[in-house]
Image 1 (spheres, helix red, strand yellow):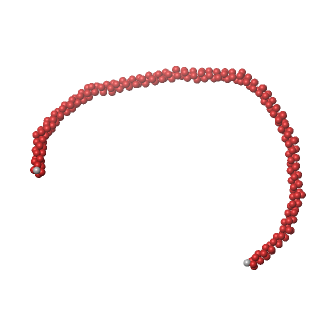
Image 2: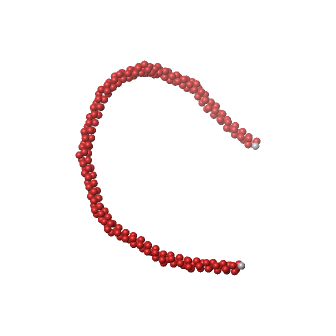
Image 3: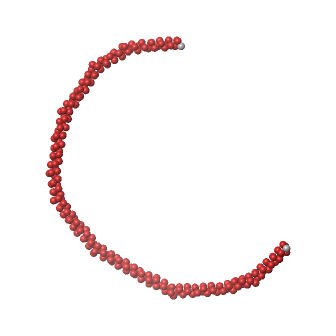
Length: 230
């Protein structure tokens, strides 16, 4: 450990000596020259330049800005107001008179002329077209449709309705009536046949055979149960 520390001390001493020599020969003179340049040249030049800029700004303000502000405030603004008043006085009244005395009458005359032109060029021709062309055509078409409907109705009545009525009266109604009567008679005859062939025999069998047999079977079963049970 002592040997390592001794080696490190020698290395540090070997490095520090050239560093100190470089600082004394290079860094310190350069720092001194920079401080001298800053104190002797840069700071006075900066102050002089700042003062010069301030003076130039002041000179521009007093020679250009201040006169322009005064010119705008005391010359241009009053002149603008005066010109606006003069313009309102010289233009508004003449324009109002022009609109009231010239443009309004001209507009009314133009509207009247256009209305009359529209009446004579549009309304009157359309009314004449309707009265002398469209209305007669519509009436003729309506009459034609009515005639066609009447003719079709007459044709249907002659060719369809009258034959169907006659067919019903002469053929269908008598045939259907006789057929209904025949069905009614057959129904009555069938009812009678059913009554004689089915109902009466069934009643006789039930009265003369089924009920006595049922009574006898019941009596036999009662006798058997009485004999078995006691």
